[in-house]
Figure 1 (cartoon, rainbow, N blue to C red):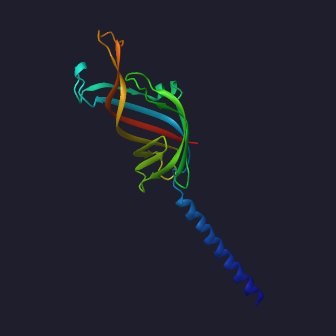
Figure 2: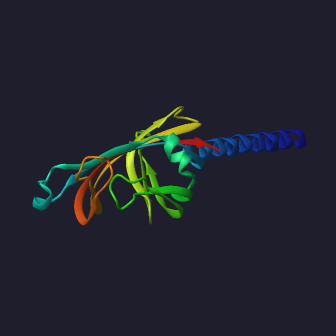
Length: 200
């Protein structure tokens, strides 16, 4: 009788262990593969600035391109751009680092500013898009992973359309040196950005 009881208890314990292990595995599977620390490893950006209104005194009409440009990761690195983001299991994030802030004057490189931001993040169930909503920084873009189950790197590509007020440099004599600056010019900024991140 005692042997049967012992065997029964051992079997119950074994079943309990299997069930517990199964729960642990289920919990592991429930953790989003993006959860963790990521370091910025790529940034590509391009922008086109279009006049929002007619600028008759400058011979420009609404819809005319007033400036355009692009920057590579090498150029951003030379400016001191770097960042890390912690995507947490509760869908909050913490972003810290040095990121570019657009210069108010068209044609001039961005400033690099120290940033600490937090907010929420969300990813599509099929891992096709990633959305970041912070107090200072937000985007919603197409997500690419090197490995959907256990990624070591990811990239996000997104576009934005913003209305901005800028300072417009004017080169009157065509020597590529501004002769005057026009304040308070309203433009529509069409920008495209690709951000690459590597797992820590």
